[in-house]
Length: 341
Ligand SMILES: Nc1ncnc2c1ncn2[C@@H]1O[C@H](COP(=O)(O)OP(=O)(O)OP(=O)(O)O)[C@@H](O)[C@H]1O
Ligand SMILES: [Mg+2]
Image (cartoon, rainbow, N blue to C red; front, side, top):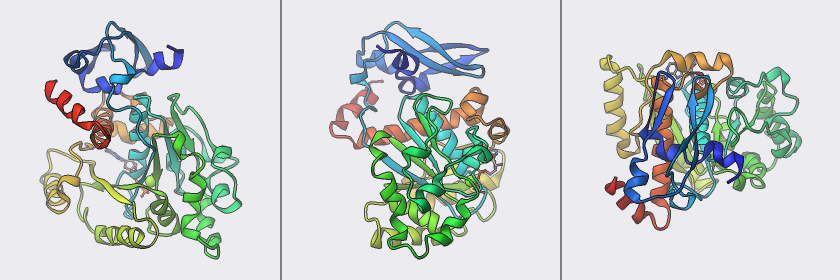
């Protein structure tokens, strides 16, 4: 077992079984035991002070983890409405997947560069960004920042230069497919490529939808939450028909949910009525720690792992990995293992 796999081995498989209290951590082998997994090793625990290692006597073998070995997937995080939680989701879902040792790339397609700064890279310090990839033909490899907070979390940064890309690409043949071409050589390296879109349906979002396998739509549980969604869904349909037939809806994510407000519950009900099972079961609560974390350049897991926001993004990561596992060949055994646990 190399040191890297010792640090992060199989954490999220145990995610719902681990509880952290007053800086001490316990890991329950619940599902592993139910499935008879019998190995030993280290796992990583995300604590407010950083990542700690914990040894558990009989953790999972890699080959009994049903969530491993998935195909690479590009997920566009999109909603042309501003401030709905796209960037917060790109950063924190990315981190939560990376804690599970999934290989993750967060790609910042927004000239506001909030995902870049939120992961701790000041946009002013970025020499080469996604702008250079789209406009100057640089490789994605050449702009990557590797190991952002977690060994398997990489960032393709943005800067405000990207504003110009919309204009500069206008005359380029195949202008909607530039990102798809740029991602092709590297996408198989990652299990998840999460693309943070700008709040518009312009060429940058169009490029992302053309490159993506699916689109994750955050909806803020506020007034007019569903307003404009038909326009987004229409764009998705047009992309499916003309540019990218494999594009699917990954799911609709309710963000900034406040249990105390009727309004939040109404928005959740309306979203479920409209989107049915495509609404994620995991709901992101309004949580001030999520709003604070970016100013420290940290994902919530590194800023306050005990917060409701951190737990919600871990739950979302687990839900997505669970859905993916269910799609894998041989998923039947995963279902029966779930039932067993
Ligand atoms: N669950 C949450 N609880 C509290 N604050 C949140 C939550 N999610 C996001 N925020 C805050 O709300 C603001 C908007 O979030 P975010 O930047 O993720 O939205 P966005 O959709 O990416 O915005 P834009 O459209 O401008 O790119 C930010 O200040 C963020 O810190
Ligand atoms: Mg944003």
